[in-house]
Length: 351
Image (cartoon, rainbow, N blue to C red):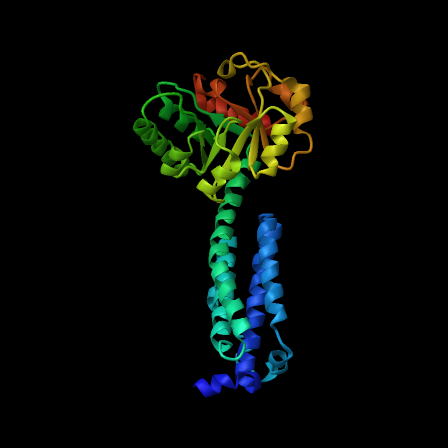
């Protein structure tokens, strides 16, 4: 066997194997690269994947291409019924990552004795792809969560009402798809158990569950994301802890804060307070003109927050502000479910 492999540069069968698997690896890398570029807009991954393709392209020698004989290959065009079962982006990513990994392993083995540089490069890229696959799959989960953020106009933030769980279930029945839970006091053990209950409710109604500030509790209850203030942990550190599958929202009321949040990779913004609010006592409201100026031409979703109620909702809509976050107007309502239904309907109207 050793003599057979040592003849690889002049052995047509070995050259064909290397050629076919270089093609497979490069094609699979292109599929992953295009998802990183267009699907999740991760330029860092695009650069990596493109570089891998270039490295393999450099090693795709003429001796391998000359050995190619598609017309006499009995397996050309061979398919498998499992290919038809790739119904989601995650299936597509997993299948193509596996394709790249397997092809690289074949290249690594067959080129080990005759082209050590190619063998080493294949091994190195293969291990990188294991990690990139996980990141791509996580980002695909993030994209699904982001679609809920983008497609829903009403964002409910809890307060410390005595019948909290009942209120949340009513709101969810009313069609709210984004719940942020705030902890004001109490023991962490109690707060965690409360968060777990809310997470289960949100899962039942296919709604997002966001934790305010407490990244530890967000992780412990497997929340869909975290909402941070300007004085909380920075976005990059939060992302390292949470990974790319989770949502990160940021509160902001200045242009510099908004630009910094977007630059550092936050998924959505909470901009305000737009009006005077009991939850932010002593904080001067920004007003509609300022909010409109801050939110014009933003590249990520944003929700306006602060003192919003049924009375001033129409004024917000006149300014084109139709994604809102509410606390007391819903939480303290006599019937939170009906209030949620009414607000969602109102926000869906053009005027």
